[in-house]
Length: 218
Image (cartoon, rainbow, N blue to C red; front, side):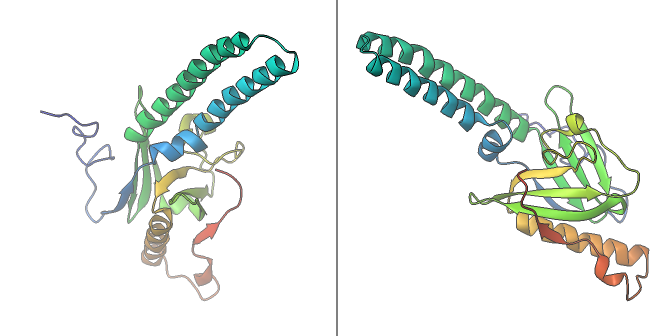
């Protein structure tokens, strides 16, 4: 029998069953390859060791030193770079495997964590805006700008948080496939929720949250 990470949850990605009237609209998780590149920077670490090897090769050739020194350097830089990038890629894989993003008709839920699983509930009432960043690999980030007095700790939520937003951290559904579609579903759900909770006037009707592109890297 195969036991999966979320087998013991009453509802996948949620700490308890949904209350009456609430339903799951969308669920997703980070793409681990994209997470390895954009959050754990495994590709940059591999490039760093490659540049070190090129620099060592330039020294060997420029100073007329024995070619054996280059081979010796390669025997050190190549495995070290591979191991370092591999460790980061593994962390990205396990992180993505243990993460579930859930959009219901009332909130966004982020379940994450390897050693200490955590669940962060973000009711629509505290989400001021939704911003999208799309990538050419088909994934994207959905950053949630929070309003009111609600605050989260940047480090507690990393890597599911928008980069460099330390004072007012923005939770983020990170490198998810089909992010644009998920964002549209989220915004539509937020508009329906707002319409059910209040009767917006003509002046405030256009202020409903919507998906906006953002340029800053996530």
